[in-house]
Image (cartoon, rainbow, N blue to C red; front, top):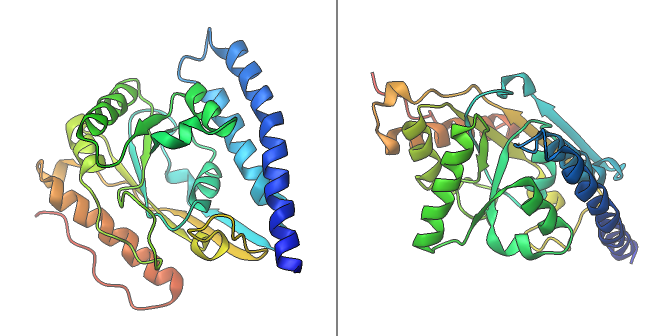
Length: 254
């Protein structure tokens, strides 16, 4: 009963504050649009908005490690493992300028989705080849403007917390634009916000760790090799965080 009361209170607070935060987002967008074409200010405001729901939970421990590895200027492709809907909240905690790649259906959600549109985040319909093509073109436009993009290369959330196979898109972008891939390891969100996102736990240990950027040059255009190397780095870091023996990550070509 106490858990259910907590969950109802959390989602009630989420819904009511989203309406208020969106008003602020819209006003900020109007004010900054003439001189902030990349919506950097609005994105940072959105980071604070999202992190509110982490800060209000006294039972959630949250930390970001090695934020200094994130690019503040210039193109980069940020990639993260994907455990739950909570990943979105904690990745906003990077407070770094980037554009999300997200399901098109989320953009239709009141307040949250509308704010995503104002930010110029990138829409994707999974499994739709035309949508995938538009997504890649939109990402390239942001990268050409020196704005990083953030993607979940697994494509969908992991059921068991283990890292699923990666899709190629993020790594094709990195090679095509000759910009680094920045691997990001997430842990704890699968237990805190399960795949059924209504089941919120009052306790959680949420970790975001930014790994060393990977330059595409040594991979000589080999998308699969870059993809597998980055996936191996995230798997190894996740295993180390869990205190188990990690597999050896795929080495870059000699």
